[in-house]
Length: 341
Image (tube, rainbow, N blue to C red):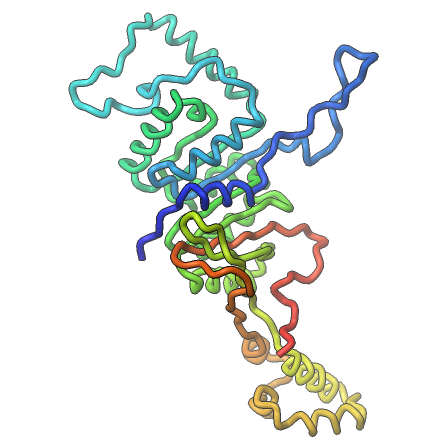
């Protein structure tokens, strides 16, 4: 399945949903020339954004613009030949700057890289496509956003494995965007690299791929919560969808009654109520020969909700699912809320 294009309005929406903003500055102190640094752990966390699926670099430009606002201005835009071979065989890769001066410039640029408070990593498995994206971004607005991006040519899983190893298996990402054919296959490993409350945006062509992601998160319990699902359309914004795995209230009642029956504490009033509800199709499908809390029954109790929320009509485009990395003390995920049907 070929992925649809990400139009400027959609790229702007994705960047807005990620909520990338500069960290809080140190508090102002009129009596001190050097104000004390803030102790807020959120503002002191470096901003690390991951984009999986660079493509031609259209979304990368929007993400880089948000990241660049968090950094100081670079001393200069590095020439493209520092990272890439010449685009044409006969073109020269060397500059007229003496070797000693170029080494000094490289060192100066490297020193600036260490001062960045925000950083965009973009990954593409196709080296030719990644090279094209680098040229596109380097040529846009005289390369204004190029220094704030690190390009990788690697599978996503390989990048995550090496980066987690370099960070001692600790989370290092504050934001992530997936634009891949099988995004749901990467959620488990990606969740390990996300800080608590980190925002993950997944762009998919079809709603069925969002449903696969919901099922993967529910079964593997990777610590992601689905905040919203939006349908995109070129230049027309988006319509929100309701996509979640849930239990109907009838099945929840049946489950509670089975548990009480197994414990031998089912009161007569509850038994008579269960008898009156046997006409319900969902409860009638429950077989008394199965174990009350078997894994198979637990899986069968869930149903997928997949429906557009009322609002404006849109056509075309893809789907945007917005996830949040949970904290250890988070309560029940919104996707577990019962469906009143």
